[in-house]
Length: 174
Image 1 (cartoon, rainbow, N blue to C red):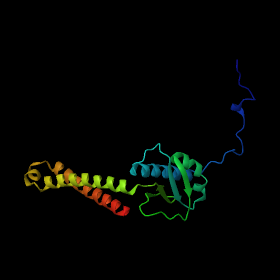
Image 2 (cartoon, helix red, strand yellow):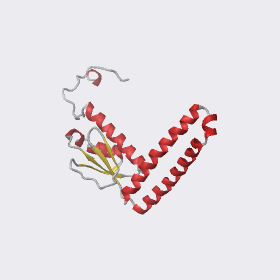
Image 3 (tube, rainbow, N blue to C red):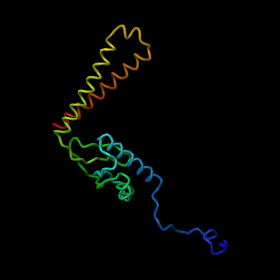
Image 4 (cartoon, one colour):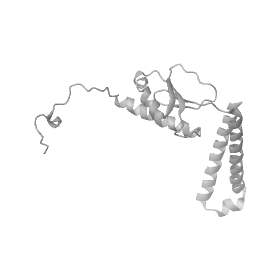
């Protein structure tokens, strides 16, 4: 039978100095933010989360640089470069964090990406045309509930914004 006593860790004094240096709360919050932004960049680029990808973090924060291996692991990065003077090529996916900019470094087959963007643009243009034709139809606007008409106007704005982004992305490939 086990018996608690003076030699038990339960009654031991807390060590004066911890053996592992823990990052500050700010560093942990920023680390979480960088990982979240990196995962969003990956999803936006259409990359699977289990695919190793290269990232570059443009920061001069030494506390964040000290967490490089943790960030690389949480981002599932094949490589994470921390460089305060990094210059990205045009069209490189980027997102801002409170520590600096995070770049997703991917090799893009420009022809395949242009083809994919053209298909996506055609799809959005067709959706936009459908919504526009409904809103131009006076009987639809007069007879449909106000909430439905407003929903279609919102869809029109969303499709227009999406189309503009897609066209900018396609121009960036040229």
